[in-house]
Amino acid sequence: MAVPVLNLKAQYAGIRSRIDAAVRSVLESGHFVLGPNVAALEEELGSFLGVASAVTMASGTDALHLALRALGVRAGDFVIVPAFTFIATATAVSYVGAQPVFADIEPGTFNLDPTHVNDCVEGKGPGRYVAGSVKAMIPVHLYGQPADMEPLLTVARSHGIAVVEDAAQAIGATYREKRVGGLGDVGCFSFYPTKNLGAMGDGGLATAQDPALGDHLLRLRVYGGRQRYLHEELGFNSRLDEIQAAVLRVKLGCLEEWTMRRRAIAERYRVGLAGLGVGLPAERPDSTHVYHQFTIRLPDRDAVQRRMAERGVQTAVYYPLPVHLQPMYHDLGYRSGDFPEAERAAREVLCLPMYPELTDGQVDEVVEAVKRSL
Ligand SMILES: Cc1ncc(COP(=O)(O)O)c(C=O)c1O
Image 1 (spheres, rainbow, N blue to C red):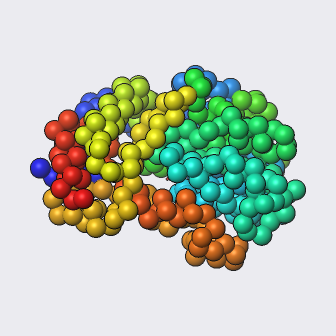
Image 2 (cartoon, rainbow, N blue to C red):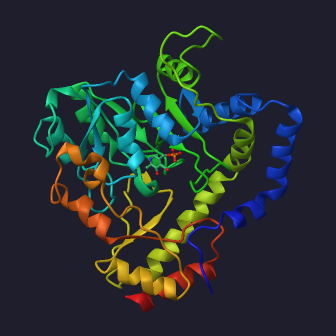
Image 3 (cartoon, rainbow, N blue to C red):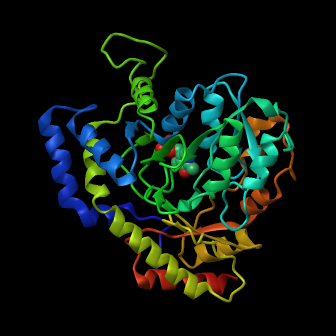
């Protein structure tokens, strides 16, 4: 039995009539950008996430970019970013003219290590930066698991540093009973189709607890003004369209059930892969992991991936090269060896198929493929 790494056709098949009706009603309404579905989705997401403001945008990348702008981060500032994440976390910093300061991750959770962040704030991290000019940090809730926010927030508060959560992969995850995205100053989410809550195109969201910050995000997404043809500052065009909002409203209604299924699949993987010497993802006891990915570690990763593919089981490597070693950041002067855990993760991680529509039989097939490929 072949097992694809992702199957969005199966997801659509399960909710086809509701999606078709939602899209048709937008087509018939003649209202395509920032209309009633966007307004309703923002209400629904705001209450689901427990935040004062929920501002939809054109992508998760835009949410990160505009979050930093709304917080006043600009040229000459420095922003702490994990060395192991998707490139967009760092490029958002570059878009505002600031410079990313990379920090290493915890090996178990793949998320920012608070001790390393503290070192960075005190100017003891690798890289060329001015410690006193660190204006913000972007903890990423990678693979759907919350970063250890409490010590990060403590460091941030004691140094007057803003916190932008990159929750692109973690919608619905909780940390000490609060949903991620509502823990820092701004929370950023992606609705890219493969995400736990995915649109049928691009989309994103920025959330804030401070209504003034929420208002600023609203201005930034439409040309820098709330009133039509009055522009208070440099703004952008980062609007979500009605078709995507209508699709997302249908899928938001399924999200809790889908998350439960992801967690059940993760448990089946854990049981099936126990005792094989395969590194299994840690799950923080004070958090709920929403398993955007189920990521294992293997010293011989590339060979195992190849052998699994030969058996028809697809897997993925998120991410094969850490951000501090990306060619685009060559000029920042980081070197191989600066962040040993991020570099080891890039060599060892393998993401197994993970989506709610996977059957137990397929999960068992993946487990068998891992066993036979070791
Ligand atoms: C951790 C992380 N940050 C940011 C993004 C950017 O989101 P988008 O693709 O919606 O721009 C993504 C997803 O692609 C992501 O996984």
